[in-house]
Amino acid sequence: MRVVIADDSGLLRDGLTRLLVETGIEVCAAVADADALHAAVDEHRPEVAIVDIRMPPTFTHEGARAAVELRRRHPDLSILLLSQSLESRYVVDLARAHPERFGYLLKDRVVDVGVLRDAIGTLVAGGTVLDPAVVSHLMGGQKVYDQLAQLSDRERAVLELMAQGKSNGAIASALVIDLRTVESHIARIMTKLDLHPSTEEHRRVLAVLAWLRS
Picture (cartoon, rainbow, N blue to C red):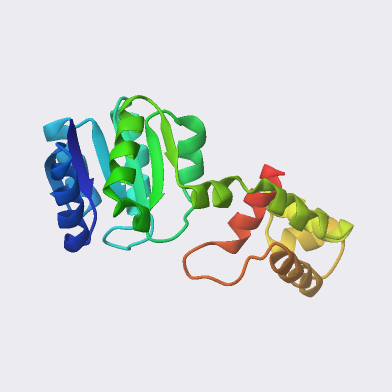
């Protein structure tokens, strides 16, 4: 079995390589960024790509975006995404559209060689591997329903207009209220949906996604 590893951490790349080699798996490339990942997959045609979600240059979602592109260009390639923390961007689309040969594990799980070996075997056989914590994070729909149920009728109306792509000014015009009131409604929506200010996620988009999933 042939595997390509993509992670910006040299320590993790070396560690994963040693673990896999000890189990008889060939690591044909271990690279640090998405461009090198694409080149390695094109050159070596591995059965599995192990990809860190966050890689250079922005350390946000380069790995996940690369996984989407790899799945498009190499539909038979098994993909195992790794992350230090729970992520949802791009992952939901991959899990829903292409669940076969797709996996997502937290990094603290793959230091167990048994977990890593079993995950790779499942993926190559056409299965899906999701860390229990990831399943709870991605599929915990009941929490979303409960949070949306807390919204008032006016807050739900504001969120529905947000889902239509309307700006705060357009929402104010549609509901015949002033802009400051719209901003207050949105602030309460974010609080009730447990969406706190973050430099890594767009809260307005996440709120709309929660509404659409409902």
